[in-house]
Image 1 (cartoon, rainbow, N blue to C red):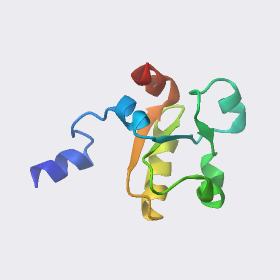
Image 2: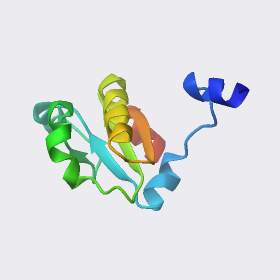
Image 3: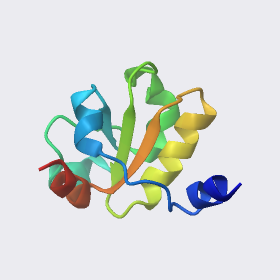
Image 4: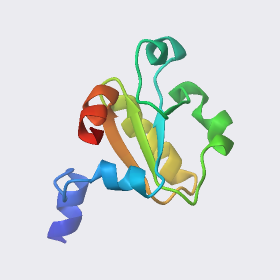
Length: 104
């Protein structure tokens, strides 16, 4: 019960994003194309949040998915959308710049 509560509050163990990428994780940047052009993580795929439903076929279900955006709000929404559509290993990487630092 305590572990479930910690997970809901985002207090679980830290996610090792570098290890996820080594395992083939896909980084999905859900910002607008204009935001993406202003800077992004090398190898990430830009699928804006408002088009995620239409472009889900571009995301492999059998590989981990890391979502990111500018601050973590849109990527949290993207995570929930993906989970509700059958993706089982989805992580909210938060803001792309912070995620990039964790991957360095």
